[in-house]
Amino acid sequence: MKAIVQDTYGSIEVLKIEDVDKPVVGDGDVLVRVHAAGVDPGVWHLMAGLPYMVRIMGFGLRKPKVRVRGWDVGGRVEAVGKDVTQFQPGDEVFGACDGSFAEYACGPEDKFMPKPANLSFEQAAAVTVSGLTALQGIRDAGKVEHGQKVLIIGAAGGVGTFAVQIAKAFGAEVTGVCSTTKTDLVRSIGADHAIDYTREDFANGRQHYDVILDTAGNRSLSHLRRALTPRGTLVIIGGEAGGRWFGGTERNLRALMLSPFVRQKLRSLFAKGRKEDLQSLKELVEAGKVTPVIDRTYPLSEAPEAIRYLEEGHARGKVVIIV
Image (tube, rainbow, N blue to C red; front, side, top):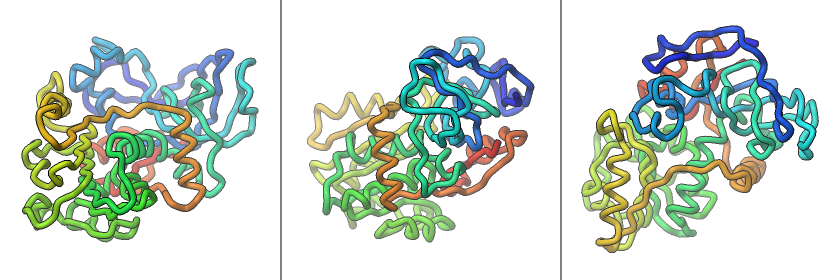
């Protein structure tokens, strides 16, 4: 089968398309014929091996443990292991597993969910990583309640577009922060207000928010806290600043250390792939409350360009690879 592989860490030049063997299906595994695969910042980090903490966390010290890139997936079940009870060949599914930038991908049964009938494979492939991150940020870390004022920084990005819609589904008054060309998009997916960060500082003191969700930003904690209510909650998701060892996680660690000493709640989120949360996302999608926003699609052979486009920060919503 065709797949996007890498044998060393580096820039997009380390990625190449090759013929490799199909994954071996274990007793509890599902083999999926991939129709589409989502691209998220984690793909770039694993490609580059940066920050170095990525390697120490078990992804491979000198080279990636898993050769084939990709995680998000939408496709049709090709085969199942003998212990699988939920799926059978021909079922349409979405979820996440190692190596989705390929014609076939394989993972444990509990990493997949029946595809919502109202989504295409391309849309379904965009849901899992970004959608779970947004859901857990809004519901679990932010504990957003009806009527609260919520600020989402990076509202036009992959996580941000899901977060805007999920916060609205929870009954919040949502303000999205984005660049000039993306304000219309942010309003179109449900935001009550959109702030163009090139023209206005959301921390200018005119408005304070009960919950702030900062998706992969690099603003200081003091700047973010100025926009919070006295007992508000800040949720930091990722980060693209900092050094080569810790990257943006340095800010996450500072937030966790400071939080016990201030009235505001400063939280850091590292999303988990829980099946019950994937089910919750599916229900929100099927109810019409959440719809994936797709910016661009690329064929499998152009996956490196898809990663480059995402890394440059221009994407409006999700980037998806068509297989």
